[in-house]
Amino acid sequence: MPEIHGSDLSNLKRITISIVNRLRRHETWRAPSLFFDEQRQRLHISPNSLLYTPLGFCSEKNIEHMPTGIKRVVFHGLSPMDTYLKDITGSLLQMLYRRAIMEVAKKTPSWRIKNLFYRRLGVGIPDWKTTIVAPNVFVDYIYPELIENIGVNTIIGEEAMLTTHFVYPDRVEIGPISIGAHCLIGARSLIAPGVAIGDNATIGAYAIVTRDVPSGATLLGPRSG
Image 1 (cartoon, rainbow, N blue to C red):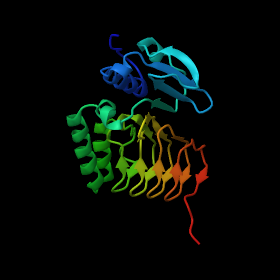
Image 2: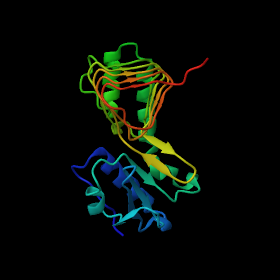
Image 3: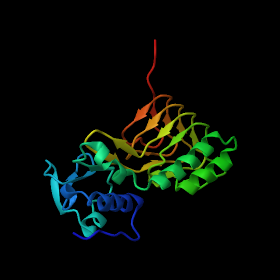
């Protein structure tokens, strides 16, 4: 089956197409199928049948027209993971380049210069002057362009993690992250793939955020005592 190609697509669709094209090198991935979990807004791609709504074969047309509001794309049938990991992560040189930029940005004292580094990786920071990313924040360097927005006057606390992919022994999940304006993301919190945080929201230190957070909401991390 020929490769599928994307133009003028969202970052999520473009990355999905790239991963599928690489996975097609494997015999079991020559003709994968699409499935949709409407309740959790997840698109599943698998060489085997799944207990979700089938959307047909994994063609360019079907990916381009996948349902709106997808939170995550899940790739199944990746066991053992070491056989498929390079197909998921893409070019090793590109990954090393992105990791090097991220490490420089993490230690850069000026948040404005730091933001320029992150923007070079593809991170969506519209206002590089007022958005503040503290030192040692982990910005996903595998798919940094899936961090679609960090809004105006938002502060990301030290050692927070913005993670656009999860790797399991038999599957990989990817999804975009969007953080609104005037938000506080606490130190050492984790923002998972597919999460959208509204304007004026507060995320407490050490919180693990796996679902959307409405505008103005407060999500506290674990407490002791």
